[in-house]
Image 1 (tube, one colour):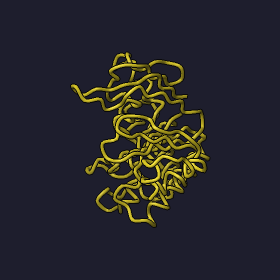
Image 2 (cartoon, helix red, strand yellow):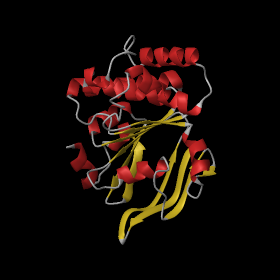
Image 3 (cartoon, helix red, strand yellow):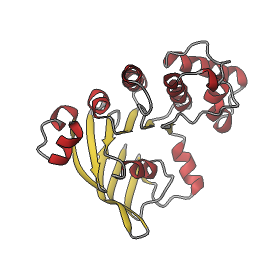
Image 4 (cartoon, one colour):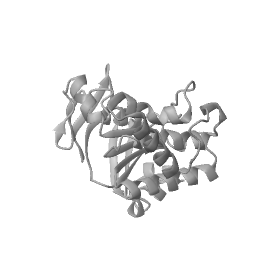
Length: 238
């Protein structure tokens, strides 16, 4: 599904990422972990095509996106869903209109079908009958759920999550973790979760990749990750 080959990214003279090689398999959940400034957010931005690599190749479904035009990239992005760190809902739109946004922008569905999809996706994330609510009426956890409903409305093959537990209490974080796992199972999508939360990473991921100072220092199953004898990884677990 996704393959990075010798991917580097420089901002001026600073190397944010250095020769990253990584394969993300169809239908798996990969957690990308790392501290602040490690390069994990830069990696996510490269994967969704918001920035271009300074070197290397990024394959989505065997197509190298590194040098595509914006128009060509938009076609690839239609196969991706994105759940943003702070939900990024449109405050002036109802919950229903937020979820429907991508459908109205990128499909020719009539309003009856769009409303049906919106109801279906909101029910899937545990928020039935909330279409007429405004974002200001929602808790942080509910906003994350609406953001996920919006992401899956277009039936993506890949879902990217940017710090899904950021700003949430432990109980709500556990619910979001469960939601990510349930969504992956229900839709059989490939999920890439960027997080600093090691507990969440171990809970939700089939594999974990750790980025440290721009280097990919380890990729392994969640179970094996605990046993890697590297002080940088052990410090993250503590």
